[in-house]
Amino acid sequence: MLRQIIEEHQFSSELQDLVPNSRRADEFVEGTTWTLCRDPEQGTRVRPGSPVWGIPINAYAPGVQNVVIYYAFDADTVHLLSIQEVQDDE
Image (tube, rainbow, N blue to C red; front, side, top):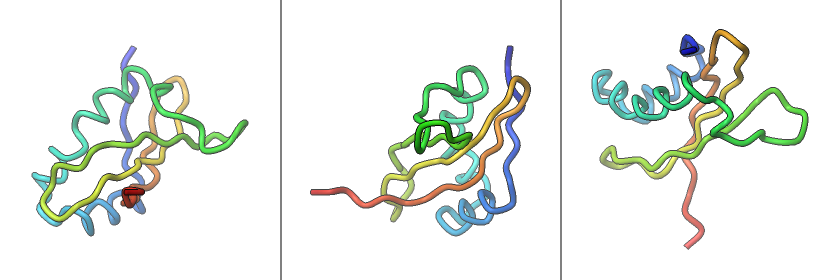
């Protein structure tokens, strides 16, 4: 069963800040949303018992570092809550 993906306002706003071109923004998260609608447990809970999960993705957009998408899900939907840029620890 495929879950419906719902982009919450905060997620959409943060994505727009990271990738201003809307078509590129869609392409930027397409692979991750494909995975999450099929198997949202591919990510990791942000802490034990939390309903919020995170999944890191490699950024291939110019000027964007790697990011983590935060989300919550139930049997029917995946709610994309936030997208945050992370710095490499190199």
